[in-house]
Amino acid sequence: MFRKVAFTMYPVTDMARARAFYEGTLGFTQSSAPESVPWVEYDMPGGGCLAITTVTGDTPSANAGGTIAFEVEDLDALCAELEGKGVTFKSDLIHSPVCRMRVIADSEGNAILLHQLKHRD
Image 1 (cartoon, rainbow, N blue to C red):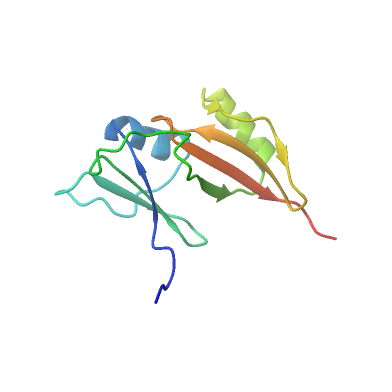
Image 2 (cartoon, rainbow, N blue to C red):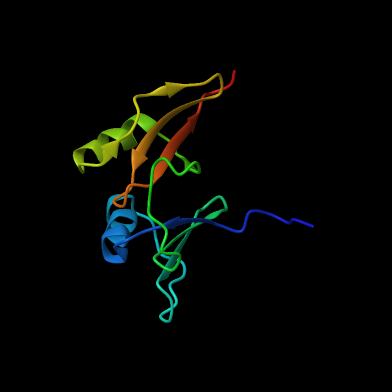
């Protein structure tokens, strides 16, 4: 019955500020933005899609229970760049047996997990 995860959606309160964060700070490219609805989508190169919107009226929160995780090539370099841009970090470096991660907050307060796989020998 279920085919795939179609997209992950985060509520935002200020669409212009959120777009500046995702497009300017993170460097995402908008893939869809209908003029009739405050909804913007960002397709990821390896699949998946993040949508931001004010349609739901939900309050953005890093404690909402769901977090999107973006796989990155160089976690250390990206974190240094984002720290230089004033991005809020919600965690120190987290190690798991298969990856390294850090959690940041977007401009609205939603949690974003930055994830880098460890090299397997």
